[in-house]
Image 1 (cartoon, helix red, strand yellow):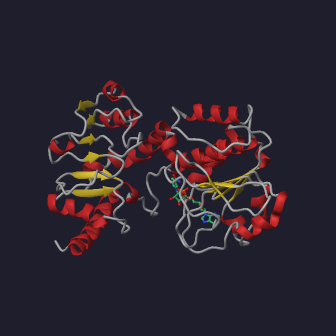
Image 2 (cartoon, rainbow, N blue to C red; image 1 turned 30 degrees about the vertical axis):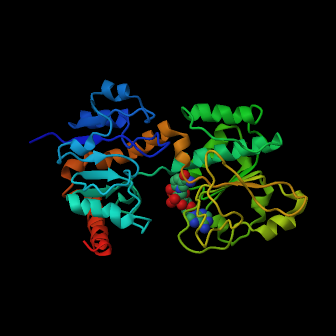
Image 3 (tube, helix red, strand yellow; image 1 turned 180 degrees about the vertical axis):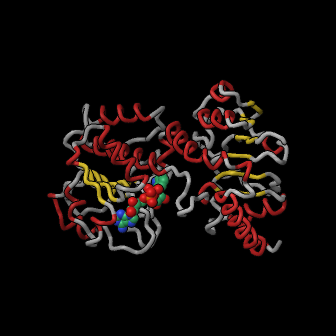
Length: 368
Ligand SMILES: NC(=O)c1ccc[n+]([C@@H]2O[C@H](COP(=O)([O-])OP(=O)(O)OC[C@H]3O[C@@H](n4cnc5c(N)ncnc54)[C@H](O)[C@@H]3O)[C@@H](O)[C@H]2O)c1
């Protein structure tokens, strides 16, 4: 029987430095009997040599289209737009199952090529929970960006461009420095604190030196009373990390912010959840996603009231490409180890079933 094989392709999305497979997980797969091909990629946070050192076979950048058809191709983000048929099995985030712009033409490529898509967003365990997600580092990086914005505000400045950090320690160090050596004395409220993003936000605040009592950790129980919440206006940084699944009362409103006048403590809102255009966004005080180059947007607070800004970046884990990749890839590993048995392993059969359902819809939509 031939050895199980995976092909890590390069990423073509601008600024994407993360990888679905890291040298650590590649080694674990090799130890389990896999052959791993890795495309050379300068953009990736991990050096080609790190993969070579653990026994991966390096191949040319973007050479996957000529890979043997039976080898599954693993990547992270969308492929560049094209009409080329896709004959391989692809494991990646394809962003085409929720009627996103161009969804049916992406799936049409699989139909024409006879390939299969296993979308990373829809690999789930028995309880329906995703096997791998980037939440923790989104919360961690979001809280760091919030603390940097607070530090900038204290200097009378606006937060400038954010750049990816080499690792968590570098991020923590830089945030502490910006705050004058420690975050002690800063107060923060994290809503959704029991989830992936929320846990990351809480950990960042601890690591930069906030006192335990100054990190309010709210989840379902604390918001059950219904917003808006005065507690949000009393902290320096509010980080929203909830998974919004149904309409809920607003957490904070313009009226409440204006009414608080000059006595408001709140300086920065970090909306990690980023339900920016959702009609049920519980933070209806801003309406754009911010970016690494323009991380904050001001909130209308009423004349002479202290400024308030929102950070609503929807790809925060990119600020920590190394650790975010390591955690995601490790969480994905048990499923990857089951790949040789994908005709029977639940995580893969369910993902394939969903792919076939979406493919049928795309075939209809495209009139194929
Ligand atoms: N901005 C980014 O870069 C980025 C990256 C990853 C995830 N996200 C988003 O962050 C959100 C959270 O993701 P996650 O993986 O942490 O989800 P999760 O399911 O792990 O955690 C969500 C938490 O929110 C809590 N929650 C839900 N509704 C609540 C409410 N009304 N009041 C209080 N708590 C509530 C849940 O109990 C849970 O603990 C999602 O919307 C996700 O799409 C954003």
